[in-house]
Image (cartoon, rainbow, N blue to C red):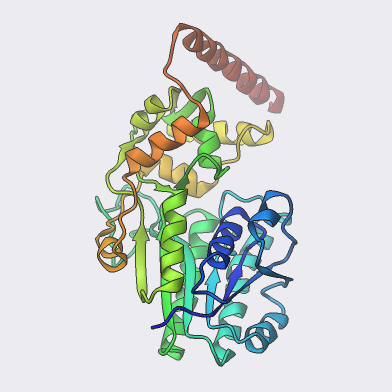
Length: 352
């Protein structure tokens, strides 16, 4: 299959979508890149999108079908999936509306696009959920043992269900689903980054989950290849190997604060109300049970191997400027723990 000449990228007002669209615009094999989002990109993102034709379009509106047909779009990269990292006005209902209904309407429009021959959809390993019944390693064919508790995990399951229906109706379109492990990187700005940036990192007492990450630059490379090359199917995208949560905290030069499992939700709630951090149920379950996926299919079919999880995490640590723990940082961490305990106690007593 030849490289598509006209590519439409959704979600270009966000960092990932803007970077993917910018890379495609710089690829001489691609003639036109069309970027769509409900809001106009600004600042650094606008600079990344030089050479990209921008349209403010809501995927739930019939305008998207007209755009696909009139512009002769040959490939669609659907990246407008709101993750637990994003803050979405309107709460959980608005997020589900954009993720699930937006995808459903986009795929309906794709089904009518006469020139379309490729579809790439961003998904997540959150689709596997996280529970004590999980296998040691998930392959692409493994069914989740329990449905994800978090809204984002349930959304990606719904999104993938719509893609399977699209594949049956449009077998001539190459459809690629990429299940990404959590992104890590200096510029990603995710809650995961901010979690490991805390001087005192809350963990679950007696738990040390195994984690995998994907470096943001490697995620961009995989997305680019999926769009310009034919790779039908579903792929896990993660760095090889694992880090336990305790190893990651030590590598980041942080101090762990173990709490009993029910207490982690209380800590998360306090962190959210205080503006420090906002955990989702998907992330809370990940920090309790962990998740590891097999990437053999990705490496074999794409001919590309993302940097190992440990290497990706160390690159994030270097870029963030973290350092080893010294006496001063230990004392500061101890004081931070005491301050956190005091604030939580005051918050609890204030609710009585």
